[in-house]
Length: 245
Image (cartoon, rainbow, N blue to C red; front, side, top):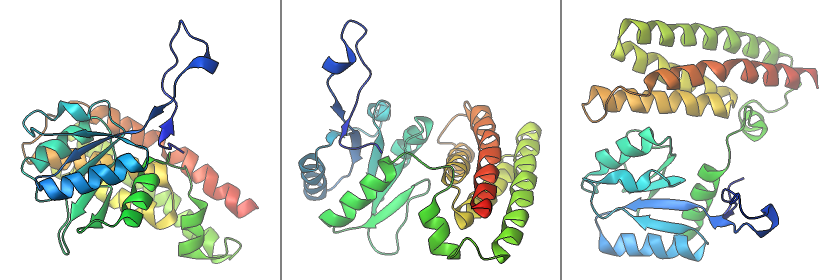
């Protein structure tokens, strides 16, 4: 799990034992000075390094961060989201009730509460699991239920079909079809608890949405499609292993 004290890359001239851990870096974009100060103070108190994106026109500051926290009403929010998606960052949206942010990985409400912020950030910084057993247990209960085998069989067939459609849409330059099938794949993966696949599909969906809206270039989509396809076999293998327990 990526904690506040995440180890950085070791210096080649320094032994691993002497390398200095670095805190996880969080990019913050929020127009309200009060909200921004509150969130920054909370995050710093939790041990994270915070980089405030003061100018949304230059969102390159997110490039070497581990997470982006963005207010849904902040000016230039779309630009920061687009850059965060390019950098493959999870995005935490700060939103008033009933508001959302396209491309966000998670949302917490404003006014921001320390416990909700801590839990959301910790969850988003944790490396994704091929199969999240906690999610599987929450949604399906006892994995020994014989009905689960049938569900997994349907899921395995569906995700392969959806991945085929994603690749076909990409090859045909059909961005609407690409977004639609990535969204469907994300939903199927979330329903069964396959987190790596869900995140890959969600990032592809968000990136294509940004491209269709004219807020991002099409570069990098091929790699996202390849990453999505590569996540399928491990997910099915993990689910079959659960059935064999």
